[in-house]
Length: 222
Image (cartoon, rainbow, N blue to C red; front, top):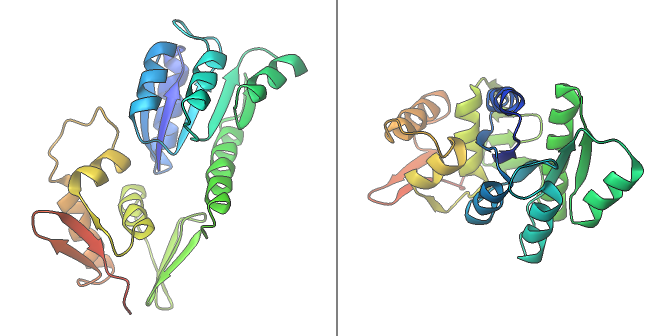
């Protein structure tokens, strides 16, 4: 899952990004309302964490502009303000949830997961994906091969999750990089091959097929 944080308090933004990255999300960060609107409009994000008090454009206007343009990405608003009027205004502009600073990081993660689950349920998707003897629970972040649970790192799970959500399709290396690593990643793109190789070793060699010149495909047959 790929998240965008639009927050001008750089220390808070960095702290949130580090924590959410450790949870297995790919996280991009911007500190300005106009840049946040541009990034959210151009990128493919699963959720946006949006501060209200921002330079350039405030969070209300960013949210309203995204909704007016037809973007349905879940938006979690953050603000130092506290009051029913502020919450109503945020929700009226199209935000999906609202969190007042200071907040518990544990609560923020719970809200993020709830919004992502709600989006999946709304789309008719189940958090548990079964492909032959492979079972991937994207909510609990657990993987089973037959009766045995397979321990994966956060990044390994994120790569597998992205392939599972598009099982049977060919997923390009650049697509995996975009959704599992953030846009600032400038390392070797062959890192994807390393993770796919590790997944094959931990799961089963024939589970993830290489489609030469195109990418990878998770096989759906038993």
